Length: 444
Image 1 (cartoon, rainbow, N blue to C red):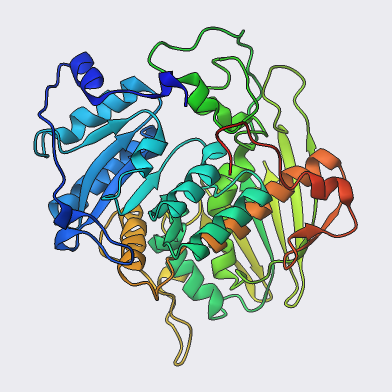
Image 2 (cartoon, helix red, strand yellow):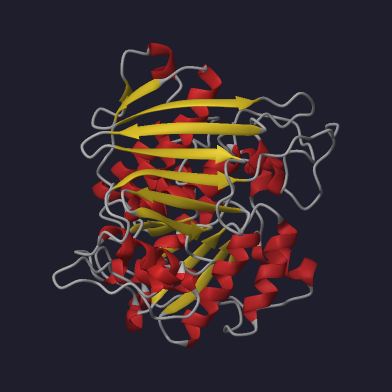
């Protein structure tokens, strides 16, 4: 293990001016296989404390006030983020109650932790989720579920083998906009839908930085993790990893993971796992970022037949910067964004479910849709018979659409995907690219 990956809690506290006494966990509080810890509170560890990581941490603080969870540990390979996050939560905790880690493996070794929230960059999602399941932790993992289809399959297998509740953070399915739209589409507001089209602004072009030394507070080896080794570059880190096919996959893997998840729900297509995909787009002409600038990806499903189109920029039918259009035999219905941050169209909101019609499930404990999504996951932790709204298998199938869209663009040809075998039909080269080697020791 890399010695630089270890960070003693006292070292961090000393660096930030926070002092604490050792905290001993009573044996009665330790979670046993198949049950929660003392007082039925879910003991949480947070891995990754950037933008969404901090949002999930704030949500957990609210759940903690309600007596539903206890925040026990924080982890980030950036000491500055880690110290800032610790300072934001430690005032509400007993002295020394919250442990800090630079390396997530130390956190997963804690027997008292029931569940983890993973908000690391995309290329870490699969490895950390699988390792968390193997150590008996339930998992909330940010979208996209994975960056390769091989990774996604491993995540599903681990969740099932170890009987863990794994929720992917595509919060649209817990948002009111998506709920209203799903209810209306499933009950025939526009009749049979033959096509769903997405519009989205293009990927950026750029990444002109020279390699340099990483910031002193950042463990760069841990950040790179399962990716092939690369020198530090500001074009990679922090949020700009999004614009590399290898680590981020562009807007189709970022926002597409949200939009596709909601669309599949509205179309009742979670089990339509086979399709064809072809893609066109303009490649970048300069800089390090390698995602296509513009892009159109066309997916075709059978039985029932319908087409899904991802377009950057596409035809902007709505008012906001991205969204979807459901094209039916009796008209169209627009859904701005993915139905989480924006309300549904008035006709969907005012739609009345007919007698005997479909009524989508909705977690509605909070006004905040992200907290609803987390509450849905907590329900699955407490009730093993319940699968969360975006169970890992749904998240994997959604990420498969995103990943195959990029692969079809890279190869420049139409791919026929067999979702049962999870292989591209008759294309050996494409099948070799459904997975990739991972750097030791950060691998599945």
